[in-house]
Length: 99
Image (tube, rainbow, N blue to C red; front, side):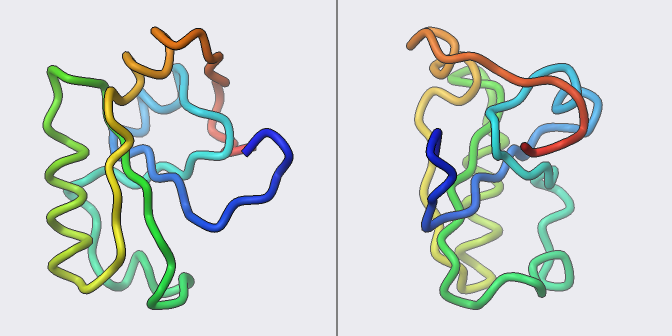
């Protein structure tokens, strides 16, 4: 990811307000409750989505993964979410941009 080349879409499935306060660089914000086919239309059907939420205390990523799977989209969970990301020493970016 740090080199700009990925073969997946990283989805931050938390609220826009929380996303703006800090997210993984390159993540796209799409709250789990808003995952519907029309929001995914710009992605090819075989696009792999990797979803994360706040961390072990949050079930947003699990709910997002279930929604994506029901829509027939490939999906994986980023175990640990934001909590795990920070625990591993990785930085967050703030603002609304996924870059």
